[in-house]
Amino acid sequence: MAQSSLPSNSAPLGFSLANSRTLLDRVLTVLAIGFSLFALFPLFSVLYMLLVRGGELLSPSLFTELTPGAGMEGGGIGNAVLGTLVVVAIASVLSLPLGLLAAIYLAEYAEESKLGTLVRFAGKVLTGMPSILAGVFAYALVVVTTGSFSALAGGVAMSVLMVPTVMLTAEQALRAVPEKMRMAALGMGATRMETTLRVVLPTALPGILTGVMLALARAMGETAPLLFTALFSDYWFEGQFGSPIASLAVLIYNFSGSPFPHLVKLAWAASLILVFLVLVLNVGAQLLIRRPKEI
Amino acid sequence: MSATAATPRPQIARPPTAWQTGSNVVFRGLTHAFAGAVVVLLAGIVFEVMRHASGAMAKYGAGFVTGSVWDANRNEFGILPEIGGTLYTSFWALLLAGFLGVTLALVLSQGFLGKRSELVMKNVVELLAAIPSVVYGLWGIFVLVPLLRGPAGFLNDHFPNFPLFSTRLSGPGILPASLVLAIMILPTVTAVSREAMAAVPPRLAAAAYGLGATRWEVIFRVTLPTASGGIFGALVLGLGRAFGETMALAMLAGNAPNFSWSLFSPGNTLAALLANHFPEAGEFEVGALMYAALVLLLITLAVNIIGSLIMLRATAGLKGLR
Image (tube, rainbow over all chains, first blue to last red; front, side, top):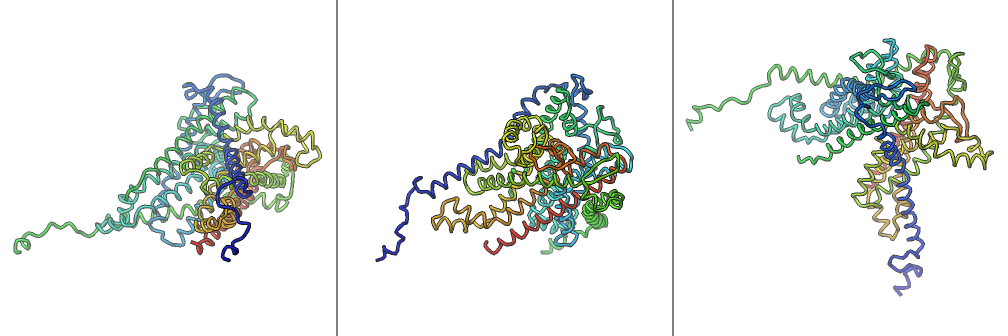
C-alpha cells in the first residue's frame, strides 16, 4: 500500500551517464569550462605576443635612446618611459590629496549626510565615465586656455580618472578600521583630527595604498585622454610642463599604424614595458590586501 | 591615607589646547571642501563640455544627431553613422561578452572548480581587465585581423548577399573591433554577474538539490532566475563600458565616416571619432567634437545610472530571502 504511492518511474539512486539528466549535466559542465577557457584565450595570446615580439628589442639602449624618426633604424623609447612617469606623477600630485581628503570626509564625517551621498554618487559617475571625456575636459580647460598641448594637460586628464578610484577605495579602507580604535583614541582625549591622522590613517594605509596603486595602473595604461592633451614628443622631458610630452600609450597608438616595421617593433616593446609596469602595480596592490589584519 | 592626599598625582589630563581645537576645525573644513570639490569636478566636466559645445549646438541643433556627413572643410558635421557604429559594435560585443561572461561567472561561482583554481581563474579574469586597451588594439591589428581574414573571405565568397557578410574584410572593420570590445567588457560582465550569483541565498539552491535536481537544473531554474536582475544590471554596465571604450575602436574600427550592416566593412564610433579628430581639429571642428562628446557623455551617463539602479533594485529584491 505504502509502496504504491511512490512514483513508478523514479530512477534508481546512483550515478549513471545513461540517465539523460546526468548526461546533459556533464555535457553542459564540459561546455561551460570549455567556453571559459576559450574566453581567456585572447589574454594568453596577448601575453605570448608581448613576450615574443616585444622581447625582440629588449636591451638597455631601449631605455636610454630617443624615439627614431620615420624610416630610421635604432633608437629606443626612453622619452616615452620618462614621459609616462612624469604625466602619472603630475596626475598623482593633483589627484591624491583630493581623493584622500574626500575619502576622509566620506568615512569619518559624512555619516548619512546629503553631501556624502552626493559625493559618492559623483565618484561613481566619474568611475563609469568614458576615459576620453576626461581628455575632452582637460582639452577644454587647459589646452584651449593655454593655447598648446602640454604635459600639464595630460596630467589633469589623468587625475580626473584617478580621483574616483582613489576616493572610493580609500573610503572602503577607512571604513574597515574598527570603530573601537576610534573610540579608544577619542577616549584618551585625542581630537577627531588626531584620531584620523594618527590612528585611522595608519591602520587603513595598506588598503589606501592598494587603491592608489590600482589608480596608477589604470592611469598608466590610458591612452585616449592623452591623445589630444599631452600629444607626443620625440624629445626628452626637461622640465617643460607647458609643451607636449611623450608617453608609452600614445607611442603604441602612433607607431601601431606606421608602415615602417621597425616602428611597429618599438610599439611591441613599449607594450611589453607598459604591461609589465601595470602588472607590477596590480600584483603589488593584490599583495597589500592579502596581508591579514588581526584587529 | 594622609600620604596619598599629601602627594597629588601628576596632572595628565588637560583640556585640548587652542591649537588642537583650531586645527581640528580647519581639518574638518578641509575634508569638507575637498569632498565638495569632487562634485564640482563632475559638474565642471559637464559644464566645460557644454560651454565649448554651445556654439555648435546653436548652429547645428538636432540636425547634428541625424546628419551623416563629417566634413571639416565644408564645416558640415553630423554623427549619425558614429552613433550607429557605437550601437552596432556594442551590440555584437555585448552578445559575445554577455554569453561568455555569464558562463565564466557560473564557472567561478557555482562550485565547478576547487577553491584554489577558482581564485586563480578569478585573478586571470582581473588580469584581462588590467591590460591597457591600446595593447589590445595593437594585438588586434597584428594578430586578430590576419586571423580573421581567411574566414571572413570565405563567408563573403559564399554568402555575398547576406547583409552581415556583404563586403570584404580589408583590414580594420566592425568584426575585429567588436571582438576586441567584447574582450574588454568581459571582466566587467563577469565580475558583476558573479556578484549577483554569489548573492543568491544558498538555501534556495540547497532546497533544489534536496529535491533531486542536477547542478545545471539548479543553475537554470534557481540561480539564473534569482540572479537575473543582477545579471541584467551587469549587461547594462558592460554596455556603458562598451559605449565609452575608445582606443580599441579607434585602432580597429577603420575610422570610416559611414555605417554598414556588414561585419567586415570599416565603420566608426563616437569615442573613436573624438580620438581620431581632436588632435588636428580646427576651431569649428572642435566645437562639433565637443557637441559629439556631450552626446557621448549623456548616453553613457544614462546607461550607467540605469545599470546602477537595476543593480540596486536587484540586491534589494533579494533581502527578503536572506
